[in-house]
Image (tube, rainbow, N blue to C red):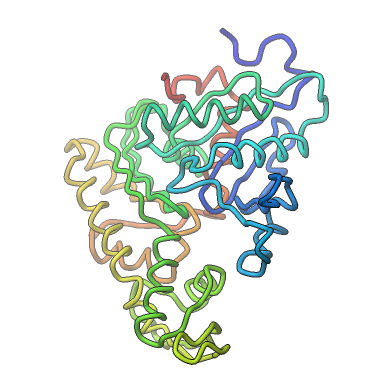
Amino acid sequence: MNFFGFGQFFSSDIAMDLGTANTLVYVKGRGIVVREPSVVSIVKEDGRVIAIGREARDMMGKTHSRIEVIRPMRHGVIDDDEVAEIMIRNLLRRVTKNRLMRPRAIVCVPSGVTKSEKRIIRDAAEHAGCREVHLIAEPMAAALGVGLPVNEAVGSMIIDIGGGTTEIAVISLSGIVTDTSIRVGGDEMDDNIVQFMRRNYNLLIGDRMAEEIKVKIGSAVALEQEVSMIAKGRDLVAGIPKAIEINSVEIREAIAEPVSQIVDSIKQSLEKTPPMLAADIRDRGIILTGGGAMLKGLDQRLREETSLPISLADDPLTCVVRGTGVVLDHYEKYESVLLKN
C-alpha cells in the first residue's frame, strides 16, 4: 500500500517525536512546526484542559489544589492514556489545515518498546484524530536526522539520550543490528539532583530548579574552571524559603550514577557489535543526539571511556523528529525502516 496515496494533497501528514520531556511535530512540506514540553494542566474535578506545553510547564509546582499538572509520558512511552490523547489532539489541531481529512502519522518510539506500549501509542494517536499510524524506532530516526547512510552496508552507531530513555544502536542495511534501550536519561539526572539537595542540604527543590541546575552547572567530567550557582527551594527543617550556593563538583557527584549507567550501556552495546561493523564504527565514529547528550563534557567522557571518535550532532534536540520527517518526505525509499508490528 502506498502510504501517500490518494488524498495526500488534502491532509497534513505528520511526523511526531512524542518525547518524555518534549513533543515535536514535523508536517510534510512545512518542516518542524511544533516544539512544546510534554506537559498538560487540567482541572481535577472535570478534567477540563487549562494549558498544554510551555504554558502548562510554567505552572509546575505553582498550582492550587484544584489544578493538576501532568506529564503524560514516562520513559519514552505513554504513562497516562487519556492525557496523552488530549495533548496529541491539541497539537494536531494546531498543525492540521483541513479538518475534514484526518492526517497520517509516523510516531517515534524507544527501540525497547513492548507490544502493549506500541498499541497504546497507536490507539492514542488514532483516537486523537490520526487515520493511520506508523511507528519508527528513535535511534533509526535519529540516524536519519543526522544524515547517516542507514540503507548502506556500513555500520553506523547512534546514541540518543532523551528525557526518559537512552537509545544506543548500530544500524546497517535499513535495520538495527544491535540495540540497547535503558530507561535512564535527563529526568533521572534531575531526580538525582533533587535527592542530593534534600540529603545534603535539607533543601527541597522542584523539578524545574533541578533541570536548571543540570543545564547550567552539570557535567560528566571535571571542568577546566568549576562553576557555581544559587539553588532555591524550601528548607525542610525550618519550613521557609531558602537559597544556597552549589557548585559543579557537587552536581557532577549527584548525577554520577545515571551518567555511569549510560556509559556502561554503551560499552555493552559495543561488545555485542559484529566485528566488521565494529571496524566501521572505529573509522566513522559515534554520533550523540538528544537533549541529554548536551550535558557538558559527556562527549569527552565517552571518548575517554571508549577510545572512539565521538561527536555531538548539530541541534541534537531535533534530530529524531527531523529523521522521522525524512521518512515522511521520502516514504518509498525509507518504508523498510518502519517497525512492522
